[in-house]
Length: 265
View 1 (cartoon, one colour):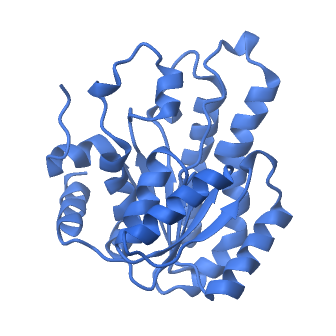
View 2 (cartoon, rainbow, N blue to C red):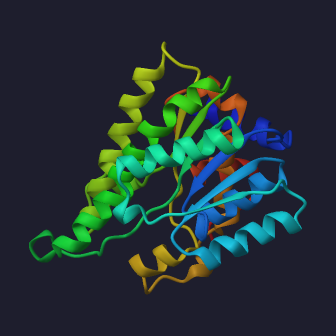
């Protein structure tokens, strides 16, 4: 782990740029997704912004333009109802308009309610599994051919500690993240010797976002790092250097400690 963290620190301190790279970010209207999209735009990437709310997508679009970044693309999309046909249409749209895709950041997610399994509402359960896991599969499958055409395609996943550690009352969210952990691991093995596309997984930890406030309403947000600070770990996963750690998984807190960008109070 120390080797990975040292490499991440070195790369991020070198101020990596993403000029001429096309990167799709899901959940681009809020939290870590928004922070990552804005940072990528500042660093020269053409960002494909995917989210539900068009007005919020417009706001991120405007912010990237104001920062001097390349003109991004807006993709209004509700992952709760996404189909493989829609995913394939998105891939075709990206190929037609940009001719390439160099990165895919799976940041979108929903909490799905913190309830006992016995009383977990099926609608919330199904929505969490669909958005946090099934939509990830659908988009990845549809976009892989484009990513494989890139000399350094990158896929980064947002996971969670409750995806690898059993905790009561995390229900569908934990189950979806456990599935995502396995999905990322299987994908990394399958791509190891067959593709230039490389996979990286980040556990952001508690972050000052709306979702965290919903999950932990009594928590003081001032004790948590901002989405902008946490986004550094995802930014690294999209760099060319991240290819040296294919299938890697990192806790964002470890990176923040090493960079000195945030310390627990």
